[in-house]
Amino acid sequence: MDTIASLFSFITTPVSWVIVQFHTVYGKIFGPDTGWAWGLSIVSLVILIRICLIPLFVKQIKSTRAMQTLQPEMKKIQERYKNDKQRQSEEMMKLYKETGTNPLSSCLPILAQSPFFFALYHVLNGIATGSTIGVINDSLLASARKAHIFGAPLAAKFTDGSSKVEALGASLTDVRVVTAVMIVMMSASQFYTQRQLMTKNVDTTVKTPFMQQQKMLMYVFPVMFAVFGINFPVGVLVYWLTTNVWTMGQQMYVIRNNPTPGSKAQAAYLERLTKHVTSHGKARKRSERTIIKAIVAKGRDRNEFERKFINGLNKAGLAAQADGSVVQSESQAAVQTEDGTATSAAAPKRQQPKRQSKSQRQSGAAAATGGKAAGDAPSSEPTSLSKSDEPEDAKPEDAKPAAPAKKQPGGGTRSKAQSGQRKGPQRPKSPSKK
Image 1 (cartoon, rainbow, N blue to C red):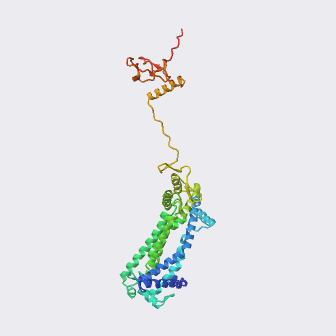
Image 2 (cartoon, rainbow, N blue to C red):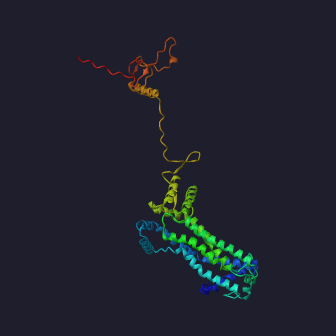
Image 3 (tube, rainbow, N blue to C red):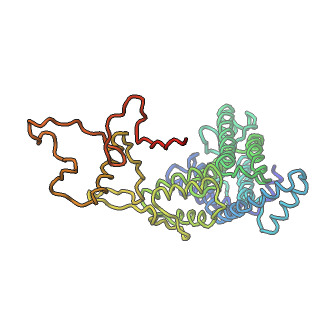
């Protein structure tokens, strides 16, 4: 390990200078020989390095998005050569070359910070052995050897013997407990970061070598940290644990605000976006308009979650535009009533007519026929040939009211049907032929 670290000795001087500058600031607050001053100096070094790597991280995101746009083509290749794995891999590599994408782009941040990691290890190893390195002189070396983090010296390792630990002014139990806890936390944070990427931010409908690579890293990296962590000084464990926590938080932010299309994270994001847009009636943020613009541009190539998002806007009376804005839909625009409440302007539902009884239908048909027989002319006085419309109460008392005749659909009246006769109009008998 010392041989590998010595290969990055060209960067040990800049790294040691940065640590000393941060130590000068924190030493005035917590004291120059405390573990807080040296520990926070290492944490600040991590933050500074990760801020410098943000452009590389943005490039990684763009490369990942370019890989996602190739998912339909990858799926076609898989279906076409599903029985020939070698030809399938060749066609995948050909597609990567034609589009200029790289499935290994997710490893770029790790590769970029590797020189800083080994340089820090070389500096802390020099502190443990009592040798000056970079800009760390004898006085700073003595101060760093006195610094303890939760009882463990900054340069102590899990594999150190009791004599070496006692020379640094600590007990072997404290060193073993602190380093073991930090190794477990470092491995757990790395595993959670990779698992979050695989379970929430990956389109599971298409299986690619990129997915297999991420799945492998999810199990390989935690094991590597656990195995090599026992040989890392406490200061290096602080550095790597801080790096993992930063990466985890950075990835959570990206997954929440810019998820992979077709993933579970996109379903959750579009659900939140639907509620936000429908409550305000428009897309207020630039990032939201960018997402909506990309969804509208897909057209029929939208996935299930994107179609659900568009349908949700339509049900709310909104329509997504090609520029990413959201406007009121003309077909389902809301109108204001007199009391100020909003109602839908869509056509009302068709109501079925109320079903009438048989007697009501017969009386209605008789009334309509009677009106046509009279020529639809209004008459002020009833004639002797027409039935009086006056109620029975208005007739003279000495006149016995006649039983009301039963009206026929043809407009006439008939007597009660005799026994054995069929109801309704009778068919005339034809003359008998002799």
